[in-house]
Image 1 (cartoon, one colour):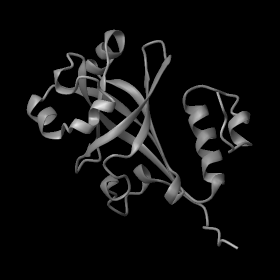
Image 2 (cartoon, helix red, strand yellow; image 1 turned 120 degrees about the vertical axis):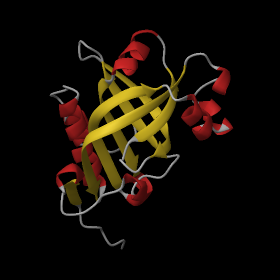
Image 3 (tube, rainbow, N blue to C red; image 1 turned 90 degrees about the vertical axis):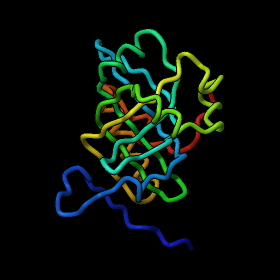
Image 4 (cartoon, rainbow, N blue to C red; image 1 turned 30 degrees about the vertical axis):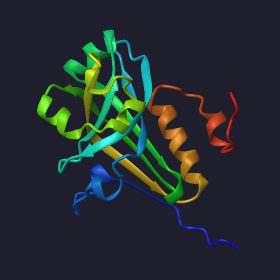
Length: 176
């Protein structure tokens, strides 16, 4: 019988007694779901691969955004970022701001050809955007599938979905 890990939850942003580094918790290359909220609070949700985490816990991603979303990123937009690290039974949910970074040196320094799976055409794509997510609140769960259920409930409440019952009681994959 597999020993069950005890579930643990903490709000990292409220833990002032210890220095917390996301670099120690989330690996470069991990894929998270970034939710950008437009001015009318409608969400735009996309998977994003982490390309860098700096010493201030800002996370960086490449994307190719156009139109309204690109305009929102230029001025900074309220956002949510979530990670499900199933192999370690860890779950992260973050609230913060996302904005585009116009530093061409940083773009060139962080770019790897493997990111073309996310941005077709790579550095030659005129819509290429380096996105910086600046977390203001970070929740972290460690534990069994119950952590996934709580994580889904938390996310549903954050993006305005008051009915998260379908997430809470099923951890089975759903075929669409």
